[in-house]
Length: 91
Image (cartoon, rainbow, N blue to C red; front, side, top):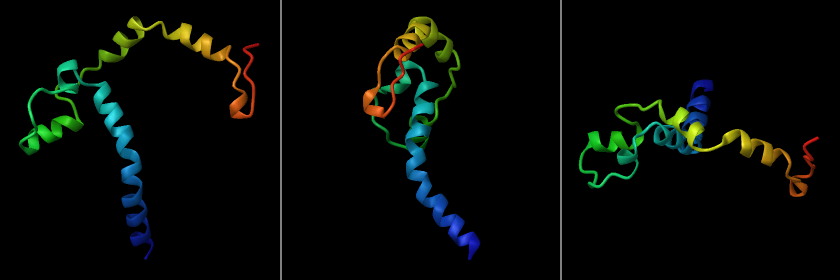
């Protein structure tokens, strides 16, 4: 009984995890893999939509060099967020 409950809960949780898997997979792809020009016609191409080949870990350092991430963090910290029920005044 307990195993069946866990199986059902895992099955229900999978659709909610799919966006996270898609986001991580896309962040590790090359630009040409994110928007492929050909139509998916077989299982190998479908698998490539979900997980990159090759995995490009250099996307993360590239993104931090391209976008001034610390500047955005400081700006976010200094914004008032009254709609969230609290205010973050940055100081």
